[in-house]
Length: 242
Ligand code: 4FN
Image (cartoon, rainbow, N blue to C red):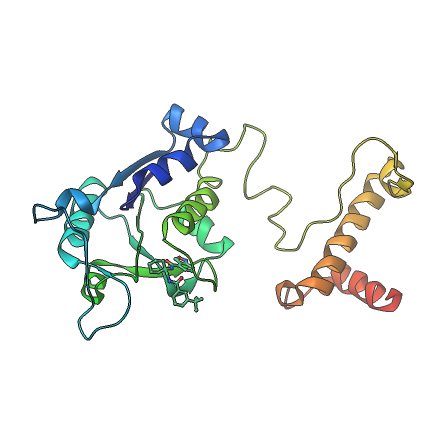
C-alpha cells in the first residue's frame, strides 16, 4: 500500500517512518511512502510557498499553486487514491476508518498544512478533511503519520505472521483488561490469583469483565449499545460491586 505525503517537511515524515514495524514493511515493499514537496512547484525565484492573507491578519497562508500542483503529481502517482487534507476542522479519525482505509488498494494521499493553513481554494482538489483531535499543532505531518501507523496495522503482512489487527487484543472495541508478567509479587503487589489458576474459561471471563469495567468507568461512550447476554450479566455484577 502506498502513502503519499504532500508536505513542506519531508524529513519529518521520513524520520518518523524509518523505525520498527513500519520500517520492516517499507523494506519488504508491503508499504511504500513518498513525499511531494510543494516548494518544488513554487513558481517564483524565491521558491515561496506562503503569502500574507487577503483581508489582513496574523501569519501566512499556503499559496494555492504549489500545493495544487503537488496534489496533481500525487494523484498521477496513485490514481484513484483519496486525497485527505489534515485539518482541525475535519471529521475525527477513528479505528473503524483505519480498517476501512487499509482496503484502499490505490493508497492514500495526505495533504499536510503549515503556518495558518491553506488557501481555501485547494479544497477543490481534496476528497475529505480529517482531524486527529482538538488541539493546536504546528503542522499536519504528525497527524498524517499517526493515521499511516493506524492504517498500516491492517495491511496484510505488516504485523508479524501470528498477529492480526482484526484479532488482536484491541479489536474488541473496549478498553484493555489489566496485563501482568513475572514476577508474581512486585513491591508488595501481587498478580491476581485467577490469572495463575490455569483455568482458561475463568481467565477469559475475568478479562472480559475487567475490560467492560474499565470501559464503563473511563469511556462509557464506547460500550456496546446492545450488550449480549454475558456482557449484560458482567455489567450488572460490575455496577453491584462499585
Ligand atoms: N493544525 C484549532 C482551531 C484552529 C486551528 C487549530 C490548529 C497546523 C496549519 C492547521 C490540528 C489539530 C488536529 C491536522 C486548532 C490537525 C491540526 C489536526 C492542524 C498548521 C493549519 C494547524 C482544534 C484547537 C479548535 C494549525 C482547535 N488533525 N491550526 O491547530 O493541522 O489534523
